[in-house]
Image 1 (cartoon, rainbow, N blue to C red):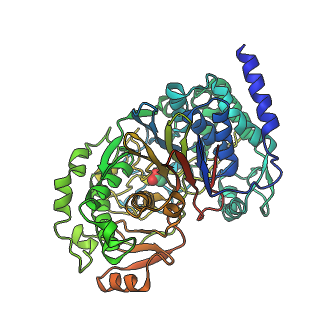
Image 2: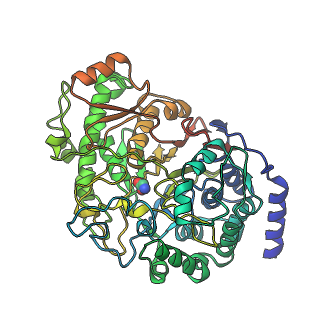
Amino acid sequence: MRRIVLYIFLLSFLFSCQSTKKVLPSQKHLIADKAMVVSAHPRASDVGVKIMKRGGNAVDAMVATNFALAVVYPRAGNIGGGGFMVIRLPDGKAKALDFREMAPGKARKDLYLDEEGNVIPGLSTAGGLSIGVPGTVAGLHAAWKKYGRIKNWNILLQPAIKLAKKGFAISKSEARRLNKYQKDFIKYNPGNKVFIKDRWKEGDILKQPELAKTLEIIANRGPEGFYEGEVARAIVKKVKETGGIMELSDLLNYKSKFRLPIIVYYKDYKIISMPPPSSGGIALGQLLHITENYPIEEWGFHSYKTTHLMVEAEKRVYADRAKYLGDSDFYPVPVDKLLDRDYLKDKMADFNFESATPSDYIIPGGFELQKESFETTHISIIDKNGMAVSCTTTLNSNYGSKVIVDGYGFFLNNEMDDFSAKPGVPNQFGLIGSEANSIAPYKRMLSSMTPTIVEKNNAPFMVLGTPGGSTIITSVYQVILNAIDFDMNMYDAVQAKRFHHQFLPDVIMYEKDAFTPEVFNKLQQAGHQFKQVRALGYVKAILVRDDKLEGSGDERNPDDDVSGY
Ligand code: GLY
């Protein structure tokens, strides 16, 4: 019977899939009645929606969409990385799932230091030593096993397998990135025929037969197909060949973990987000608690007072992040203290409306922001029963460590760079850390990923998240304020210009036209420094309003897409 159901399902997929020969146009804004997926690629959103139309719930859709992204969005979608998921069940219970990568058992605190104790540049960002033990396959399987409705795991991987086998037409932005990283691909994967090519262009067909084979093994064997056997052996072989220290036992020991979500209240809203080893939930909660003490809805969107307050709050919150946050299984993160409203009032005691507080005054020290991409990817989903899932996954940089597992066709992460290699020395995002986030065997590196669900009147109100490295937290913060305090619809809340301050370096990163010239001048006069950047985050969000779902992808990412019914 099971076989017949699977067969019928596969046939219906076969007949319903759009041609893979052309680049699918992406849709940035959609109003729908029942269910919605917002992801970084139209083909992936399409897969999630089809799973829900065929009886799957939001978790089933999340699993299938993630596997599809591993094929169609290889710069960040993955099976060789990790991530976090926040789930709100239809009865209102909230769950948080940690499938973050962990340090291999042989990792040591001084892994990236030379004999003089200085950080060796590049070791934590590319090649074998930058690779953490992947968590994605374990995490997706754990989510499905506990909360999925589709009985057969295999079904959830079929769309991804088909896309990998048949190939699909790549977008302009994927072609641009594939070209940009060719030298790195060649360095770590000489002879690779899938990703290495003279010149990629929009519309070229990317076929990934080796990845299709790997996905088939995972479809048939579950996580054992990835963490044991031929795939695990191939991972360890390639990691070692490229200078790493991962062992088969590291893969065998990897476990995803359900954790208590961070829950904070902001005005009439309940915010559900990710606990450590992500800093996202705590930092977002701190920012919202501080903001609640000031009438920003009266001051207005990006007015001088609102911006100055938000920037000053961000400086203090990121200083706490650097000092106190890390994997709570290894370090006693003072969660309650950090979210305590009186503690946060004390933190803002030296805040004034006239002048910027120098970061050096908050904690002394300083450095320049490194130039790197802020790649990661996010999926927001709501199903017809009100189950909501917010999931952010990553390889860290574009295509992670640039290391591809030979014969199995997938990129491995460079997530080890999210550890603090040495107290006070910045990682690729310019973030510093301390003992709380130092390297230890089996420890999980601190993240900024902030998959979040907002409730109002005990019902889902918003599902959101974004890539963006250190800027993830402030992007999520701003989109929440845009919708709640500045009464924007979902599309406007996502597209509104953003800014970001992370304590060090002591600059406001901002998008073009984020401020009026008057506000900009006034902020400068108050002592703020500025650095313009192309984009801060690619937010994917869904708002529930008047019984309708309003989804928005981010115009900043050409591939972002909303799909629903
Ligand atoms: N790799 C980016 C993050 O986890 O925050």
